[in-house]
Length: 225
Ligand code: PMT
Image (cartoon, rainbow, N blue to C red; front, top):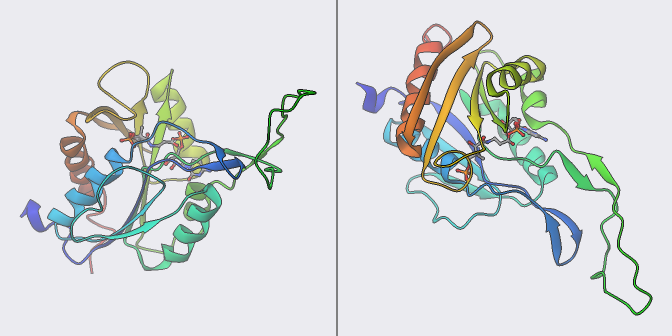
């Protein structure tokens, strides 16, 4: 029964954006609403999984039946997720984690002054959480990444799959209408290291179930106990 095909499985889902502070009142972030991650967490709960959701700041109510942990920065998401990794059968990284953070955020609010100077920020590269998880993957754990792309979706997504070492990547074109950030619908293509699996389009809830259908198939041998 599909409704119980994740029964007893421990699954970690990440969602939402991260916020990287420039000063105490300003930050660098992105357009992720958390909806795709929420849809995955809800679908997993419906299908019997024990779900932990690690999310950046979003405006969504906590999903029913799911343990939700809130984080703000990429650094906080890294430490939270890596601490939870060991226990999971499946990890799905739908969060839009910042690749770069301001290296030296101001400790007080930066003010426009008479002798006006434009603030200049140096950025540092954040740890790649997905790549780290894949390098420390315990046996029996399956790891799904997302790839948000504005062009050359399939080529860029497959390069990311390879570079980060994930088991599956969900390629998400984030340019154009009715897909990607913020909206309730999405259109994605799924890849494993063996190649293209399928595509899915519809509401984020429908797309979430389609992704899980593929994950179950891929994990048939991995999850035999
Ligand atoms: O939240 P919504 O509004 O519903 O929008 C959904 C979405 C577009 C955010 C989602 O479908 C999506 O594509 N999420 C991934 C966004 C992203 O950061 O993609 P990326 O191509 O930059 O990163 C690739 C993968 O590496 C992702 O799984 C990401 O979580 C992970 N990553 C990225 C950077 C980093 N420092 N650590 C990471 O783990």
